Image (cartoon, rainbow, N blue to C red; front, side, top):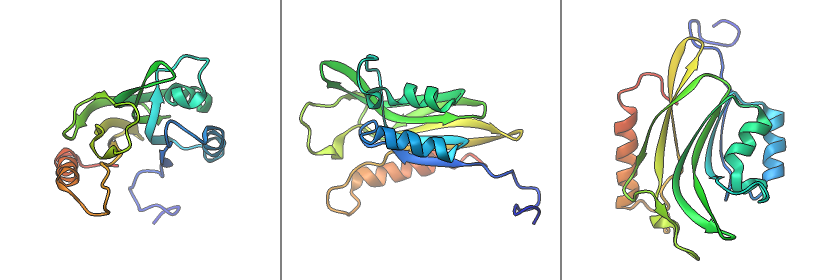
Length: 179
C-alpha cells in the first residue's frame, strides 16, 4: 500500500450516483450537496432536459447541473419523453465528468424510447436504458454503465427485471475496468 492506495492502482476517483427524483424536486438542495462534494464524475438518473429557460431548473437538470457545477463533459441518454406544462421534455440517464469522456452506446432493455402516457401511475413498463460512456482517467479508459432499474411492484423479480439483469451482464462482460 502507498498513500492508502494499492500499489500500482489508479488514484482515487470521486463518483456520485444520484437519482434526481423527477429531474430534481429538491433541486436547490441537490445543487448545494454536489457543490460541496465536488465529484469527478456524476452518474444521474431521472434527469430532465428540453424545457425552455423560463421553466424550473429541474426540467432542464442536465444542462443546468453541467453549467452550475462546471463539468466540461457530459452525455444524456433519454429513455422517454413526456409533456409537462405543454412542453415535450425528455427524461433519462446522464453522466457528467471532469475527465475526458465519450459516449459509447445506449441500450434499451425491452420497451423502446417513446412518450410516457399522461397520468400514468404504473411505472413498471416505462422505457429504461443502460447508458455506456468511456472515461479517460490517468491515462486509462474506464467503462461506466449507468441505469435506472425497471420497477417491480411486489418486491420480487419478474421477467422484465431478469431480462434487464442479463442485458447488463452481457454489456459489461467484455470490459476490464468497469464502473
